[in-house]
Amino acid sequence: MATTSRELLGEIKKFVPPLLEKFHKGQAGRIAVVGGSEDYTGAPYFAALAATLLGADMAHIICERTAAQVIKSYSPNMMVHPYMRDSNSIVPASTTTPSINTLINDEILPPIYSIMSRLHVVVVGPGLGRDKVMLEIATKVIRRAQELGLHIVIDADGLFLVQQTPDVIRGYTKAVLTPNIVEFQRLCNALGVEIPEGFPEDAIIAKKTCHALAKAFGGPVVLAKGRVDYISDGKFEFACDMPGGKKRVGGQGDTLSGTLSTFLAWKHAYQSRIWDHDVSLDESSLMMLSAYGAAAITRYCSRAAYAKYGRAMLASNLSEMVGDAYIALLEDDKYRI
Image (cartoon, rainbow, N blue to C red):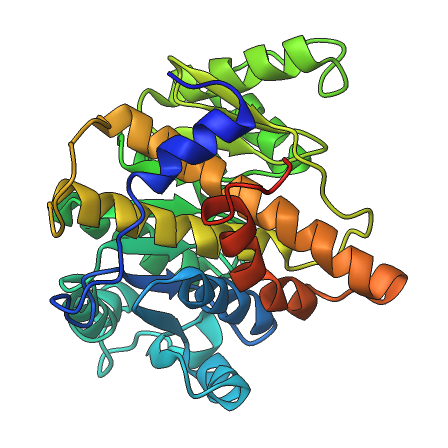
């Protein structure tokens, strides 16, 4: 498997769909972000926006209903579905009202499952929050995604959910977990993975620990975000050390999870042979390369946004750079990595 940044990006180019006249809407990616709550409306928007700016054809946001009104005001480019509910919006069960589980199974989940039947990728977690009912719905969405064979990206409070119930994603090979350093340590604790002294500063220790966590999950790829992004499926490891920006703002991880969903949708298109190619990339390589591609694109966006805005950089400024990042990393052979 390729190892240098240039070699890895060269491999990624192989599964980026060409823009052909014969293609129809949706073939280059149908994704959904499952998240968005009363308190957090920006995260699912930035994730879905990043997915479409990189090249996904269609992006849905499935969120709590009060969040939907806010998110819809951000842009007409997203399809926003107010199907999720939180504890505050569900009437307590009584002799005349159905139980919470009945409401979830009979009223909330059917329209969500209907959308999922048309997707390639679901991103679970951005803006989800930790409300008990929201987490229960998200858990059922993850299980349904596995039944449908969809690719799954789990970020933010989706990782809190996994921390509480690791078996919800353990063993599923079409998933990518994207923890920051704090989330990574919590996942290690949940799965009994030792965090050695020297983590994360020592590169060898950090890479081995990422490998150990991925191996403990037994299927999903782990993309551990940090000064260097470490990626492992428990068998192989990549490290993305391309320079990023120096400003840390909330929302950068949403750009990563969104662009990752597009790479995974392109993986599906590649494996579906919607264009002629040499079929040289196998399943595990495609999963790892998708994660690396998202890390590289996000780092470029962060660096470019910081160069333009400095300390005034916002999460929305990363979105502005997604198109430039694609051109620089995946179209411009002269770009110096």
